[in-house]
Length: 461
Ligand code: ATP
Ligand code: MN
Image (cartoon, rainbow, N blue to C red; front, top):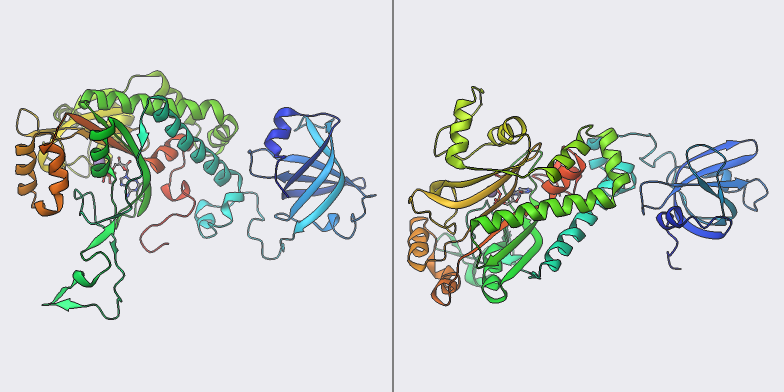
């Protein structure tokens, strides 16, 4: 058995008056004038196909008339033009085999629309709904488009490690990885004796592949890594997951300006690719989730992103007359309310904020000549807030070492990172794009838990 005939192919090619075979799940069934109408979907596209069964079929009474939502079937029949409204083709069944039943007493997807909250409690089934199926297809397309974007520009994909022993960059709390027996932890003077652990020292799940990507940018020029990252931060927001995916390009011989240009080009490229190739799925979100979605997507494609410095952003926020929960003054980390004000009210399009105070950014960001700010950039999207965080990296050995010491980074764990500045250092830059936040933007889905198949958040895995 091989699933070659997918509904999307049939609906696109429309081989009228020819025999087709298809497999799928029943969305709905109704009977009328001795005929049964089955709406079958197979996940290949949003639309289902209508299958008509006549009562002369062998198993009509024993099986076909007992089919309920969620049952799986294999169908052989002939594709014909449909006289009815709602579809231009339909299948006249010659044979319908039931592959799996779905007890209507317990199958959870009976109603037409369920709340996203309820669907989260059945994450293993929710991909069969219109909206979560569309999310999964768009997510897959965006991932493909990102790889395509980088491949076209000659970037190499690097698979950076998921387990790390360098406690990276303070990007958030980390999950420990250990093979110690938690019932019998070896102690050495009240401290866990990690020399007995698998790696002989503390290890955790990575919060970012950037540092390793830097090593390969300084070997291959332009690289990117795209993998899962983990943060044990106790955030209960609609924009944070404990496990999320990040795309991190890193470019040698590149400064902050080149970094911003690439990020803007990349975001436009993948959004356009999705708009062009997933029109039905995007239309679903535009109708049912966010009526302004299509307008928001085209506004990203049609406008240059605004670019302002952090200092200008702080001025604009303080002059706005807007009341913020968290008051604005130079030196604070911008909060989501500030980010959204800039992107949604003030500019009404994506905004790139650059040159943040060094005190709120990690050690590896390049110190500007003013000695107070670093060559950082965050991209803020309407409805999302921060979607990209990036910077030019500090390539000067002395300054980097100084900043690491000030940040209490244990230098002995980072000798390899310093080597990159000792031997053939070059200006380089990169950024991290939160993949789920991108999927949120393209679908208009308001909760990040609904744009990844199996979300991990505090208390939920
Ligand atoms: P935020 O301020 O929104 O918490 P951050 O500044 O901690 O994000 P970075 O370390 O700059 O994030 O990570 C790069 C990108 O990864 C962010 O721009 C965002 O798109 C995404 N991101 C960061 N943390 C999370 C998370 N917990 N869940 C999902 N995406 C995230
Ligand atoms: Mn950031």
